Image (cartoon, rainbow, N blue to C red; front, top):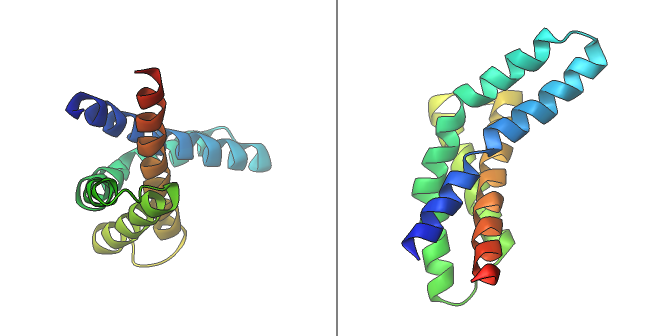
Length: 125
């Protein structure tokens, strides 16, 4: 079980890449400049510590608690991820603005990837 959880946490750390590529690609298409893709991607990767901290202090404890009470849902994990992302983004990066929102969404996506990976691996066993 620990190995599956560790693998799921590793999958959740792909969320900064996903967010950076999607947002960077969108703004690169809109503006016509390809360098904005790399700037947004590097900003998302630089803020990946927000996802790691929210996974460690919010998503994993929420997962254990919800699993223990047999109430595990995507909405609970996504909420824990978004709260963790918002808190750590406020503490370390930005107190408001677009970076604050993007970091919260990135952490929620990390929580969703975590639970999706766990459920996918549980069906294969």
